[in-house]
Length: 424
Ligand code: AMP
Image (cartoon, rainbow, N blue to C red; front, side):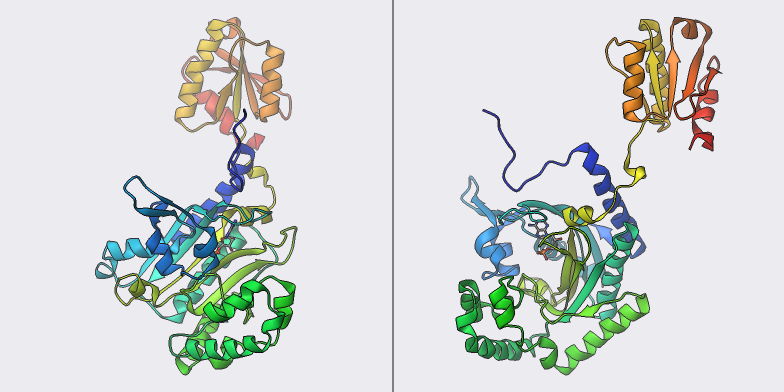
């Protein structure tokens, strides 16, 4: 019986991986420019970590985690998101004693047992960042500018930044109470999940996708109306920072985010163009000033974001630069020519020149066909005569022009022909 991949989990095949590389390298370059450094944490963590950070009553922890018991009877979970593990690592490494502000990023797979559909998978990859140690609104704005920069670098038009503030420990309870009162009044129009959430996690009713719930909560009070003075000042600071960075945004009071730990700034980058389907949120994040302390660390504020690589990749166009084509393909006739080509390949590849040959004994015609299929820019044709005279017949595949190149004193002359910009 054929074994298939697990539902909701995808293979990334070579044709698709170039776009991923483009996104990842744009992100790495941008992170470096903004002073963020990479951290890698394990994919598996103690279940308790996510229960305490993501939140017991969130959809993620209630319904979506891959949780299992290991051979010692310990409950472990495949990480459904990146922040919890990063915060754990931050605390465990006592990082706050090393530097006042830590700016970290990560790239890796996350696991959520959601209903798979376009843009929503059970294994998906995120690129994310966290900044610990400062509650300065400029650091929030800087992160948003960082995301905007990555989006611009990979050319994704039509992605809109939607911004909100969820308040803090002072004003959030007041908002919760106001919202719960409002929800009680419209309870009969809410879906079953939202009726339950009204009591356990009322803010989540605002991002329910059910049309009935959207309509019923259309006139719900917003957090922005009840922000305390400190939150109002912080939120104004974030908006000023965005203006300084030249990043445009819209205010969106419904952005409450799926995780429990957010305070102050919350945001999403949403794709408004193209065939993105229902899963149009490319990036989400916000501030979580209480999370580090809640997980047993120092009272250190934090702010972070994560974007889904699959969703971002689905928005970007093909680029010729994604094609991985050999610069030179050796087509050979006979054993001596093949050995000659193998030595040349070894030398050229050592200097990072993409050089290819065929495998097994094939006709010259078949080898040239393969060179064409691979998109080789040059083909070096080598037979017994060429080996005897220490030359190759170098054919420029675009112009068809063929010249003999003498390699008797090494490959420098050949290399010079290959890197000659004339062919590019
Ligand atoms: P979240 O951690 O839920 O805030 O998600 C942050 C980003 O990760 C989203 O904006 C998506 O781009 C991506 N993402 C979240 N869940 C999935 C999923 N199941 N499949 C693919 N991408 C996802």
